Image (tube, rainbow, N blue to C red; front, side):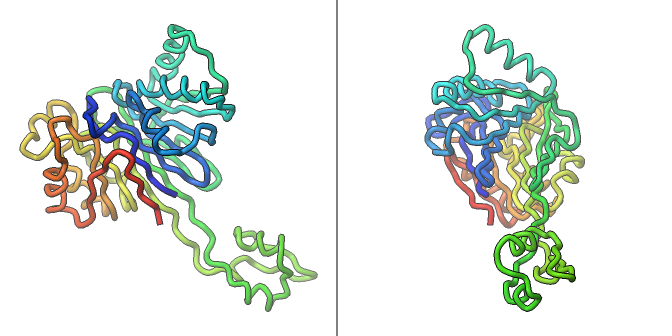
Length: 299
């Protein structure tokens, strides 16, 4: 898995930063969180691919978080995409996309399925879930949590051989946690596997004030990307616009026992985000400031 930050600016782009867009690539699937204006340009630069299985999760219906979907859909059609796409977002997401496609009069080369988000489980796949939690912003907004399901432990071939399991399909079943029958005996996967490996937890805050509810929602995340629009000296501005400061993001991450905090969604007033990074580092021990096209390998 890897996280790819396609846009890291707040309400307006800068020469160095595009508008909000984050992708999580997992086993050939793209999970995109928000798509600000021009998202398809950064997506092209990233080399993530136009015809992969894909889901888009929209936090809220502000332009810097959703307008880029329109250009992305058009560009993917021009690239002859055939793979269906799923889009999730708050009330109004279906109307927003359908109305613009109608007015702009462009057809799609692939199927788009749109689902309105409520709090709770949004997606439940074989290897992961996506959950949502209401954020505290000026419009209805959701934060998202990617939870990878626990993986089977390390496979020990010597133990399988000792138990008389022939190499091939039966080994594969054991490796995926299935019990098998060999002759007249049952071989349990636990006989040949080490302890289960806990899945990764990755949080995406979207635009929000820090809240106790989000602190609990993001508990024990391995990685958390959080709204860091302002420095602490502009906390009044953060309160007024329902955003967070870098210090507040770090404080929430520390209380939530987050392993790695990623600051993003920087106000265009900051030519250098290092002031926000240093502010957060006084509170949390593992913090980085996102940049456009930053890639983070999820070990």
